[in-house]
Length: 151
Image (tube, rainbow, N blue to C red; front, side, top):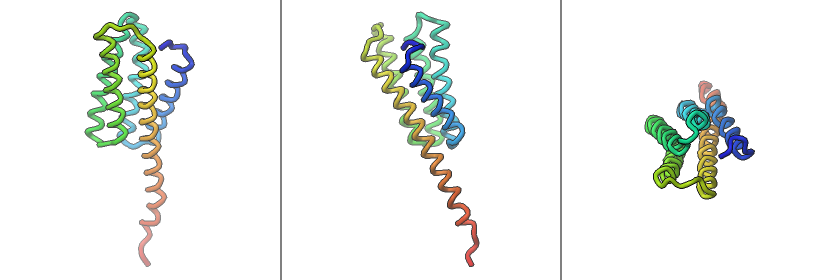
């Protein structure tokens, strides 16, 4: 996708916002998973700029490493949203691998599938962070009621 494309900028901006929210308000799984996604998001364009002819190989490598890193976090924290993100990165890895191995040029199917998949990754991160934030705030509201001694 073109780096100046409005869709690219909007999608990546929303992903960065979701990652920041996850780091600030999320639990331990979100605080580890969000930087992994941020590194993937930022490393892709940087590596493609340094190695212009290797876009497909870079996509395969980054998505594979991200899925592997998220697998460890998912197993450690047994987080449902992280499991969804890991599976979506696995699908992303498969998409990149297919186009890389077949040496197919990027077409409309690739672009649409890639964007929908990455949008779902961002949405999963956002839902996980918001749910954890909600659960933690609910626990804090109920904590004073539990702390009072019975009269």
